[in-house]
Length: 238
Image (cartoon, rainbow, N blue to C red; front, side):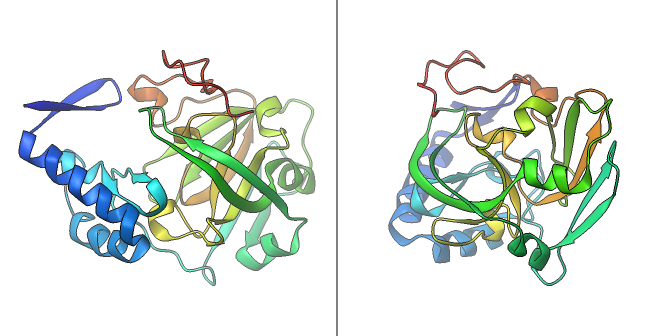
């Protein structure tokens, strides 16, 4: 019996299941997003307590994690709400984001569980640009994020959020971000482990203090610097 670690708890996974995931992972890398989409359709209805719902093979070397299936929101429907300690609340459409100054990054995506996808191409808007567009009040100290899956949350200090390598991303791997990768819009925090890069980004709230997110409440570090947190020894991306 193998064990798959989910946050601070452990979920038993049969040896046959682990071997199956190994095969599916190889197929995901070989055949990319078409196979991944089909597998997502098969597994997305599983209970969050089922280990199968937490680890799905993805294209380009990614492993796909989810506890709430794969929510769908088309770009034409998308809204990014910006609120809290700002001078002007915003409701940005997908097209609004495309019109803002674009930032291109080529950076690794490093998961805290150990796997890494090198030199991923990302495009989007610097989070700092979005915050500056809304205007920050003097007592702003943190930025809180929610996913439109209704489960995932995250947070950064204001200093972390203002970094030039933290973006509201709408493109990765040379095209629009797919549902399984958190599209149409997700956060990408280059110097931190992947769980900080919240998928299916729905809202940004500027606040007085950090609020631990979904993964932090399961035992992961709030400050998820690659190579400097969560007991890992990986080399930092930046």
